[in-house]
Image 1 (cartoon, rainbow, N blue to C red):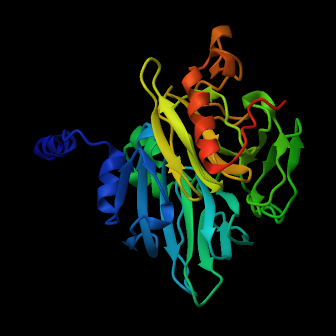
Image 2 (image 1 turned 180 degrees about the vertical axis):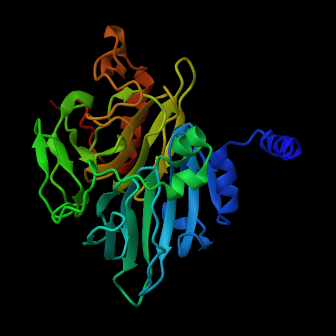
Length: 354
C-alpha cells in the first residue's frame, strides 16, 4: 500500500494541475492564447467524451479560474449525455437544434435554440444537445468553471458522477427555459434562456461612456454571469480593470482593445465578429469601435449579484478608490490615435458629443 501511495504521489509531482491532466486526456486540440481572432477558425478534432468534434480554449486572462470549449454537433446528430459539478454557459455560434435537461429520475425538459442563443446548463443536471438540421453541423462555444472546480477537488469521479441534486437551481420546472424571467433595476435580467443576443434590446448605461448600452444576465442561478455591451459609432469605452476570468466574444462590428498592467505600455488586439479576448487579472483594458455601425459584444464573467466569488468592478475613478480611468485622466495619445484611425476610414469622431 505504501509503495502504491508513493508511486501515486510521484505521478502528481509533475507541476501540472488536476485540470491540466484532465485536458491532456481529452484528445482534442487545446488553444492557449492571449487572444483569438476568430473562434470559427479554431481546429477541432473528434472528442469521444462529447460525441462530436471539439477543442478546448485556455485564454491567458482567465487565470485558470474558468475556460471555454468549442463543440460541433454533426448533421442530424446528438452529443453524449453528461452531468458535472462545474457551471456551463452555452452560446450558439451557428445552426439550430435542441437541448434536453433533466435531474436523475426526473422529468425531461427540452428547449430549442438557434444562432445567438445563450443558456446555462443547470449545475450537475443531465443534459444532451441535438442538431436540428441534417445537412450541416451546429457549433457552439461553452464557458465553464471546470478549472476551478477540478483543481479544488482533485477528484474527477466526484466531478462527473456526484449524485447530489441542486434542486434550488433546477428541479424539473416545466417553464424553466421558456419563462420571461425577471427584470431588476432596468438592466439586470434574471433568466435561464436568451433566444438571440444579436437582436436583443439593450439598456442605456453610460457609466463606461456616453453611447454605451448594457444588459446583464443573471443566468441559471450561476456564479458565472453574462452581459451584452453595445457602444456607438466613433466612440470608445473608458478603461477599467477587474479580476481574472472575464471572456469577451465580439458579436458585431470591428475595432480593437488595449490591455495593460498598470505602469506598462498597452498591448493591442484587433477584433472582428467571433473574436474572443480575456483581460488578465487587474490589467486595465478598453474597447474601441472602428465600425460604421454600433459595436456589440457578449462578456462571460464571474460575480453574479447573487453569488460573488472575486472582488467586483467599481464603476468610479481609480482616484476615488474605483477600478475605472476617466477620459480626462487617460493618456492623451489614446484618443489621438483612435481619432486618427477613424479619420483614415472617413468616420467622424463621436467623443465630443454628449
